[in-house]
Image 1 (cartoon, rainbow, N blue to C red):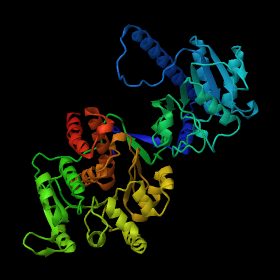
Image 2 (cartoon, helix red, strand yellow; image 1 turned 90 degrees about the vertical axis):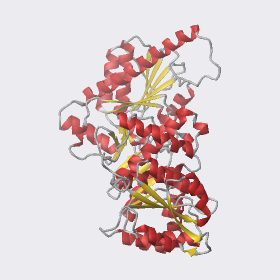
Image 3 (cartoon, one colour; image 1 turned 30 degrees about the horizontal axis):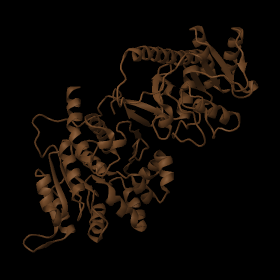
Image 4 (cartoon, rainbow, N blue to C red; image 1 turned 135 degrees about the vertical axis):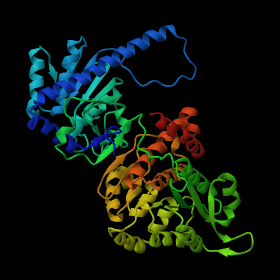
Length: 542
């Protein structure tokens, strides 16, 4: 992947190792890093306060707008409370409070925990405050504040907040103040984004050096508010060559696309055979085949039932057809025969959108999984049919262990992944990265789990977590469009993991473009499909 397009997503252990390497290997003192972190947090609050005052002045002179969009919370004033734990995250908070105090903010300090348990750096910050005549409180104050800095846990969370820590989190959440979290909201898992108990709901999170996975995955992303990633002196060199497995694409930058040769033709740009659509489900085949073509592939042939002939010819006249069932002349074509006849033509196979789970579909999917050596994208009913026969699934996993196994990408949503893995949906949703990592290795395949933050993993545990897209994309047919995009990129020669990552990001960017045209409420799969044009045009201009 292109380093200029991507940014790493780290776990708590990876971040702690980077921090330690920066101090021990490169010699930057921990207190220096702490001061830089504190300065970044203080600067963020100063900017938010200035913006709030400017907005308040402008609103005095502007007539109120009907149906104006809701603004995110901003500080009402400058009264500030620092809520710090005993670890280094608490030291970051205390230092930030000192810097704010020196800028004229009235600041109070609250240590949540026993002072004897403070890290050396945090104890040093408390001593500095005392030298300035400040008092560090041991209990929750009774006064009101405009700004609260949450520096209780950071990435050091080990279990759900309890006792004094739980009380502190609840105090912050019911305060009504503007909340800035230091590194990650207290109570959110830095690795999975899980919230095992209560967690701080921040308006802004200032995170250091690299994004934490828990700030991108849900529900952690909901608690983080606006996330600012700031450099404090911990750079990529601190990985010492052991780069993180997880990454995302930088916001506002299109993902990698296949190179298009100026002298190419429809054959060189790839041919996709798409097994999709059943009686009453022709729309899935229409959306998916259209997405294949709009993503740059040269040709698509739809393998579907004869009952969909007129719909497909009308809706996607560019597509070729390979149909099974009773034809217009009264003849009969089997699904297996239609597949074997068309399979040799294709560069890539995609199967599943709207295919159904009847006997024809079951036999067709079994045939595709056992006979084709072509790269395959398996979606929707294709995954359901694979999951339904556990004996076949077990045998299929063993066969996939061969080094010669053809490329395979599976694109389930959490319900389909639950059926495939045999795990509860709640388990899948709570930690999709771990589930996909395990089953990508079992299937020797690229496996993604669709969701608000879609994750993609390959057998080596490379992990992509998507940040594009919006709630409007939770609509019928959206996944069919994604399948077509990935198949189209794969047909143009992209490596499977790269095609899946780029396809997911492009799909989300198209959803964002569709929302800009209308709203998240009115997005349909067709609008996502149409918006792909805007996304690819933007890439051409970069």
